Image (cartoon, rainbow, N blue to C red; front, side):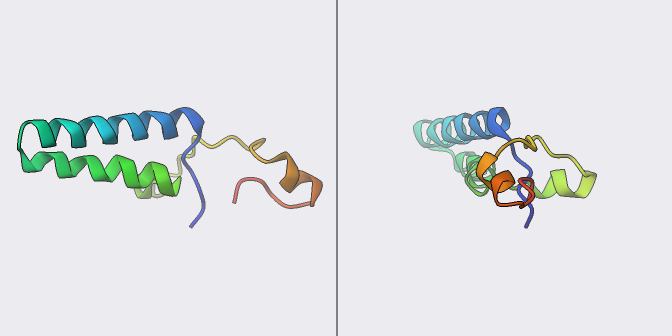
Length: 75
């Protein structure tokens, strides 16, 4: 599973997921469960929809230590 969720996207997904879950809880509505989707994709740094369309918001200069080891930083 190649990580394809970058920094800004990660933060946005976390905030959106928590907000949707909180809204669902406060409204006593099951739609709050939908908030798990952006939350899980943020925590995993992987979005299945992005992989289908070949999108990645992850920067290739994300891990200087990986470059020092001769590894690709965009795994």
